[in-house]
Length: 85
Image (cartoon, rainbow, N blue to C red; front, side, top):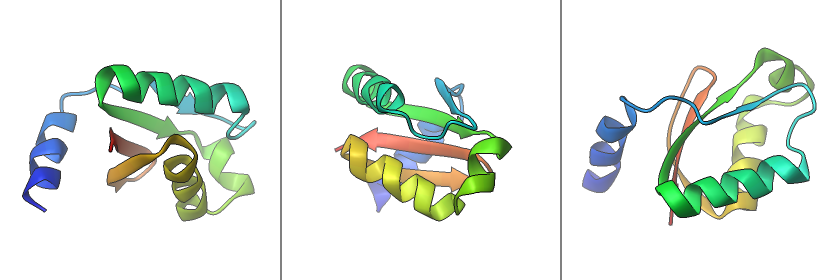
């Protein structure tokens, strides 16, 4: 729990490194996220409104977490912070 609080504080200064758009989660986006997580450990991504129109936001976030093998740190609005396990 305490680690999540520390990671949340670190994430405040991060800029989104990837934006998920109307095409949703393509295989290339998953690969890119996995590489970014491996290199940076803590990343922020932005879900564009067009990505959320087709799916429920929580389902989309859970799909990202499962496919990248990461941990959800924070989801505020359309911004999601992920940490590599």
